Length: 450
Ligand SMILES: *Cc1c(COP(=O)(O)O)cnc(C)c1O
Image (cartoon, rainbow, N blue to C red; front, side):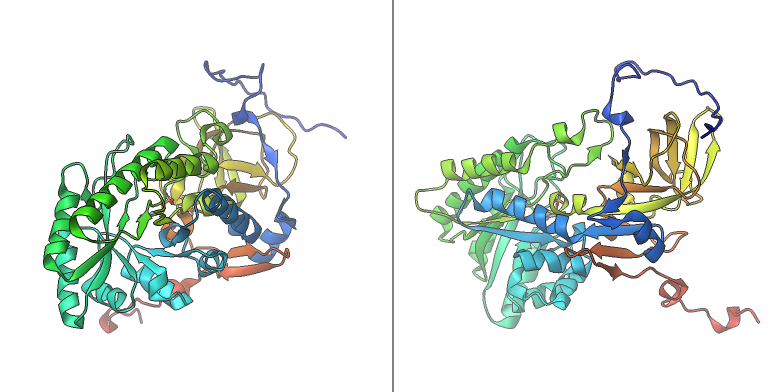
């Protein structure tokens, strides 16, 4: 076969990076022809492009791996599925089947959890904005309410009066664990004594019963030791409360924040090297529990890990729509999915896999999305061989925070499918059309075009 002519390109070798004389993970391009045995071509032909694909198998495996890392080390573990990370019903249902309760941060998410069939007692209600209505419902249904601020204490005391009974609550606290910036806007600060003030206030009111502590130190935390510190401070504070106020702290909810194998922008090391395995987090956390808990005391350990469970189970299949040459010489591609679907593209550099073997040398390339917006960039510089129109690119991991933060902007949102464990494929969210978007609009009579 005659080789196709290719225009020569000059590629600047960046110092500090591996170049053509050595391999670099940045230059490695993998071919992906299937997801869990289902061909990419079949998925795209049947369900369209772009297409979100969630792997049931990988979701369950990840959940079990992370859950076991804790359950093998500590006897009283409960996971709460963080709805905001991915609240597609099918995703929640898989994780509830695996044993996770629901963790919600708004009235909407609370309703979603109830609607899928979770009982109030199996819902953790976090967040800084819980409406009175939502709080009342949660109190009546016995949800685990985690108080964020003093106004919420007042709200709950009023509700306790109204329903004529004490309400069990936990408080969210924030603290210095060596992670910066410190997430100090949620809950009550420990070091300043604010958290203790909240406990005093709850105790003196007599209408609420404190039975848990909650803390969530941040997201994509790469330091297992930060959790060791968090647990130490939580346990000490729990005993301070038990000894001075007579409350029994039945559970410690240490939040989420474990990283997935995604590549934060600006980091050079590949995720396999930069991201500690979850077992390391589990080891630090349970070590800290055992060295700070009193003998024989095993309060429930709740984890709300989101990203680490679902991120790697999610893929986005996209199609190259066009290519162009930028004035600075770089190659650019327009894909049919952009930041409208991949909100996390602002922070992460995804793995990009190609659906076929491609001839030709790699050159620095930019991948734009379909939006008529300058910020719509999926990757501002990656090495790609020359891609023909119609080539499919598979971005991963994209299971966390995209199906919740995506926006209907300029384009419709596409199908989301789940590749089931038996390799059948189910649509779990149907692609939108005009009626979805205009359903809530009203056009005043006098503005109607005749
Ligand atoms: C977002 C959130 C989580 C999940 O965080 P990840 O970083 O995805 O693990 C857990 N708990 C609370 C309170 C949250 O706000």
